[in-house]
Image (cartoon, rainbow, N blue to C red; front, side, top):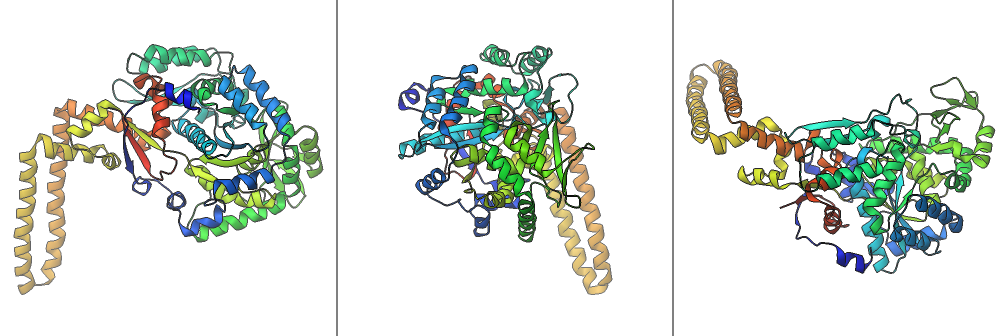
Length: 557
């Protein structure tokens, strides 16, 4: 982002807080150790602590793709997408032999998919900007995983309704075969109704009409899930000069032909290395993100019907089989396909990043915790194919606290970490502290009194009949259990009577921890644009600290 553009942005005094990832439920040991730069993690990420100037030299020395051909393909695609001048200028910049790329990526999702897509893109954009200020020519790229075929994930988004409920929105695209890449799936005639449904579920604000028009501009019946996503992403981030990569492009596939050929030739060596790596990860109590077996093969085959067929290696017969069909290919046949029609091959998840970093001079990749696990596995794929292992960073991570939730948290003295305790426990504490303090104190007094008297009785029993002391301990637990049950019933009764309190807590939890997951994994950018308007993206960009290893909480007051 150039300084003139930055000067036009509306600046906001940001209320930022931090929260350690290891205090957030469901975080993997591998991810936590990566964020903490644990000594045990270094062998899986050999470029993790290298200087960017050193990385730049290493990447450029090993880059082989014809930049002119690459950039002509990108320019043609982006002209068709009506890309910004800033994006077209960055494509021209990428032609330079000293220019590197900062990459992020995600599968195309309905109405942009989850917020971590935004955080990935902005992290890449910000690092590219910082590298340029340090004398390293860099451009930001976003790889749209349009060949993925997880349609259920791509076709689903969520909204926090006016009533405080998380509502699932999906589009009726008709009958979609399970193994069809999203690049080939049209949005269909029902997309207009899907947008209406989504928008009608939003809280009405001064930005609602603008949000609806934004979605209608790009999510049209004649677009695919991938093309609509691409156009929306360019609209949101084109002013930063973000370049999109649509890997289904036949021209880009042709440039990947040499790495495809080498991967097919070395697939057995690759599999052996992956199996050893999985055992190594297991011995250190780390998980493998992708299951790898002896029949692993690094590609899918795209047939004439645009179906993405998983392939498996039959070692006994030295042949490659379709996983879900009675069809086979020989290694020579696949090598010919890789040389002559590489657009028929689609790298699997462990091969994709290697292909991506062959195609572009990647100095850094931004991803999430799942991708951190992928990289721990496929580091050996880079080594097998003689490629420099890409420097990996975790994307910025945010929870956005809206004014309504902020007021609730302040009113009831709730901290961010409280959201992980669950609604019942939070409500019980709030009732005890703010609604029925006298009754809460009475319960506490009763427990203290009963415990005191039982302790007195226990001392007497130990003197006279020690065996009864154990019997008393069991009965103590039952007595206190009954008191606890009575207290829980009291809390439920008070919650039922206090509908306003219940709704406030429910809205706050649905907003900050929807579906028992971090907000960034559920809510999408349209939801926040509706609440805060178009400057919201610039505020997130402003909030990103590329050296921050913790989860950030942005309070929108």
